[in-house]
Image 1 (cartoon, helix red, strand yellow):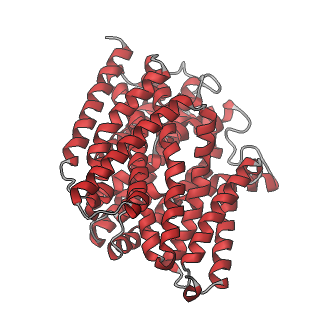
Image 2 (cartoon, one colour):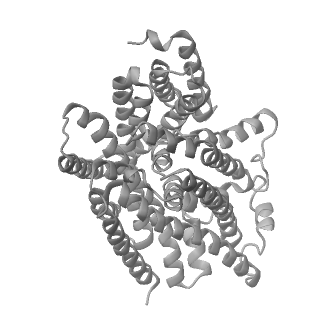
Image 3 (cartoon, rainbow, N blue to C red):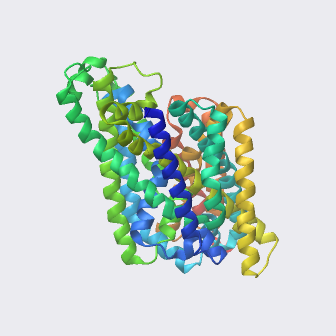
Length: 483
């Protein structure tokens, strides 16, 4: 049996199981609250694995190994920034956001901010939701594109057909079960991802020790021989340039501090404080193991293939696994790459639809009918999914991926400031929150579009700028003065 046929059979079986699993858990959805936030009754282990699968996306299985393969040790600063951001989020924010969501009966990210800052609820709800829906809607399109590219690389099918197949997998259970279905399918995907990132490096080291014909039998030697910069922590830079390089990598830290709605929603949905502690421990452990494994996979790929031998550095993980495992086992582990993209696409699709439904549509077309609210949520999810697929088909990839680049710096770092000050500064109020959201997004768009991001990363600069705006507007206005 050919390698591609084995890979196709394993992937097909997995995706059929995933759809069935998602629909099975969608049966529990009876209300719009179930659909949007799983009734705020998630077990800790489910929330943790779902958050990690969604948070890492294809980054942990394709992006980070690819960066480690291409850059070597220098990529460690990005890994450290991400890991520390995730640890801080789980340790300091998760249980607080869970308590706040329960206290204010919030069903979405924007709903929480609006209820928490009631004096500006209408405008916060409108601006926050509109911003999230627009950028994350395009993020869904980007995931469809990514799925199409991956299936094209693996099977040779057209990227357009690959996009359609990716959408066909996601749409049924996302429409039917919403957040409830998505988080439980994420659990399966997180398990496959962590198995890949643990088993892969172990088998890789064994393979290197038994094959003297490879580029290098040691990743240390491979790094030293690949290029003058591969074995350098600062990419061969010195002085201020080295400092800026470190800051650029570490700046991913700021986006994890409560500002990414698709991750924060997992915190808000946890059942109780006991489950929040369980989720924290699982989430942090998963992250540390996964990032170590992803870095090692990239460097093992470097030792096997040598530098600059792969057409696309982000396929170092599947190329390495196909090299060191029998085809059937490699197929099962490579499924993790597909799983990673699906776990992001379905989460963002449901996030966008529930933000639009709960914070915009339901505010202007109010009804108390439970069945009608649930049907409306499902219809909007279906519409968004179809439109996102069409946009992905028709729009130049550069436009979509450029807009997606604003997500982490603009939404992640802006909303991180808003969430942190909402939780930890009593004087912070609605007008300051609204001003920070508007100013942070505008600043990010200007900073990136003028090319300044290549000099100083927008993630760091916008976090500092948004923080400054938040402090100034908090001190300049008093809550009672806001109408």
